[in-house]
Length: 278
Ligand code: 9MG
Image (cartoon, rainbow, N blue to C red):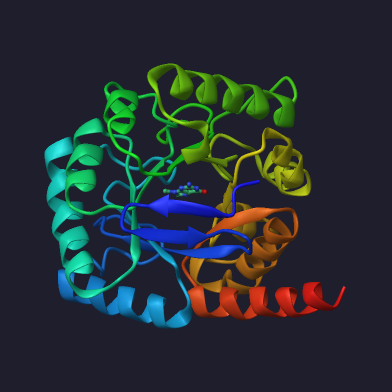
């Protein structure tokens, strides 16, 4: 299994799980209400996440929560690229771009992005071609349906097998266009077209995806699967978020995508201290 990902000008050690800090620059972002749309506020949040231990900052300009509105490519570029540039000017940190649009990917690659995070797994027009022209790692996430309707009635023949089949197909497509398998990261997509039960089934079987031989990413932070199980509003999901992050890390997640970097880092350090003694 790969020990390092080459993210443009920086290397990411994935021997132990690393934290990806979430930076939403969407006015309708679900957990920060859009207050980080201002560049200075974004930079302040990024600096804090770096101090707290994040090794990647994931910038998203389109909300993917259920029912979220579509954003044009032009608007997404104008939200994301100035923030990417400002971060790269001030900090030595890997910046991942959370987008499904080829034009946004292209601009981000040209402006110093170190990773592409695509919740649509490069299925949108032009994405495979753009990514084939760079060397960056790409996260391919599984989603059934589209954000507007994905929670209506998700159906699987066999949840884990269906997601594995999807990954195998996407890996094939990537390889056919010349994207080296070693650049791929897989994410089963908690909350993206899965019922509450299916989300917990996925977490229980997260380790099953290790058989695909690629680094795994887990994004569970503050999600509805935590809020709905515990009856907690979005600002009351810290304990649930940390617990799910740890369960994913213990099953082989190499990148954990979170809002609460400091608290998740503390939990990962405890796990690491125990692992060293085992
Ligand atoms: C953008 N985004 C929101 N949730 C996510 C998740 O679970 N994984 C990845 N890769 N991206 C996500």
